[in-house]
Structure formats: C-alpha cells, structure tokens
Amino acid sequence: MTATSPFSLAGKKGLILGVANDRSIAWGCTELFRTLGAEVVATCLNDKARKYVQPLTDKVGADLLNCDVEQPGELEAVVAHAVDKFGQIDFLIHSIAWAPLEDLHGDVVDSSREGFARAMSVSCHSFAEAAKLCAPHMTAGGSMLSMTYLGSGEVVPNYGVMGPVKAALESLVRYMSMELGPKNIRVHAVSPGPILTRAASGIAEFDQLMATAQAKAPLQRLVTLEEIAQLSAFLCMDAASGMSGQTIYVDAGVHAMD
Image (cartoon, rainbow, N blue to C red; front, side):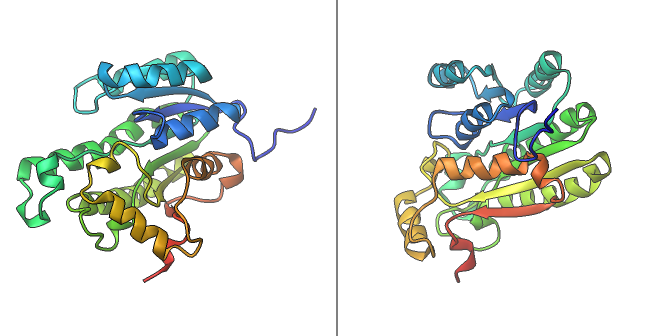
C-alpha cells in the first residue's frame, strides 16, 4: 500500500468560516481544499449572502450553513453539524472580519467603545470560540488558521480600528498555539497582501492601498486568491507538522520592505 503523501489533504475534514462570494478568501480555500481531497463544511453570514455562496459550494460539493458569530448558538450548531457529518475535525479556517463602518472609517481615538468591542468580538474572539468548540474533536491533532493583515504590526493609512484588532488576533494565535500544542493542534495567522474582498471594500481608499502595496512589493504585483489558498492548504497538510504559532505572510514580499 502506498503511503499518503504529506503534501495532500486527502481524507482531511474540516470547517471553513466566512464565505461571502467568489472573491472571498474563505471561498478560495473551500474550492482548493475540495480539489485537494478534503471534505468541507463552509459557512456564510446569512440568507442574503447564501444566494451568492450556495451556487459555489454546490459546485464543489461542500455543505453550506449560515453562521453569524454574534448570534448565540449559531457557531455551536455549525461545529455540531461538522462533527455529526465527519466524526472528526482536522482543520479550522477562520476568515471573518468586521467592524462598524463609523468606527472603521474614523480615527482610532474616536472609535466607540461598543464598536471597538464588536469588532474585537467578531474578528478576533470568535476564533478562540471556534477553537474551543473544535479542539475536542481534533483527537488526532489538526490545524487552525485565521486571517490577519500587515496593519497589525505597522500603521497602514485608513486601516483604523482593524489594526489593533488584528494585532490582538496575532497575539491570540500565539497563546492558542501554546495551549493547544499538547493536543498536536497547530495554530497560525495567515497574512495576505491586499485583495479586493467584500470585507476589504469597507476600508476607505482601498484602491490606493492596493496600488501602494503593488509598488512596494519585491514581486511588483499583488497576490492572488489562489496563492492565499495554497498557503492555507499547505499549513493544513501533514507536511507542515513542525510549524505552529506563526504569522505567515503571502503578500508578494511587501512585509519585508520599510
């Protein structure tokens, strides 16, 4: 019998949170993970998003559930569905980020207490909540990934309140990697360069942000959705078994520039 390649997702089963449309990172991961042999339960926010997402997930044979992490019980129901369907969970992809527009578009010092708290709850703490629910079902170990951005560690104009939120997310990843490591669960933050997702479209002057990133990038271009998904897939493969607790950039090299 031929051993399964460590560079494979065949037989892996997991959950991908946050598909919004065909340009979302969560969709790029869902499509590639299915191509590479993984079984996937994916989520979208609500019925409004479902009409855009359902044709995509139907095409690749992935289950789709609604999941608004601000609504009590919805995240728990999604994890329970995945466990009932698969019997185990091998990977969790958390691709959810949100802040109220009035807080996102204003100065950080002007952000409301409520808006800042909601941005932190949705974009950061929901990863910890999902991890707590999934970890007991990763009996053979597994991988957990969340999506961050360069603005976590340096000031990016117009990124605003999401900068501190993503900084907290990256710190959360490090603590989760320490706490879950004894269970052979690996945790990472993936830091893509800017691409035009629905979440990114809420950032003021995002076209200028993309132009600046392309001008700074050593590769002299932006990254693609496929490249982000490829890194995410690798981190969920057995080939990446020695890695945990990292923020890993896929941004055409922008992070290396001053």
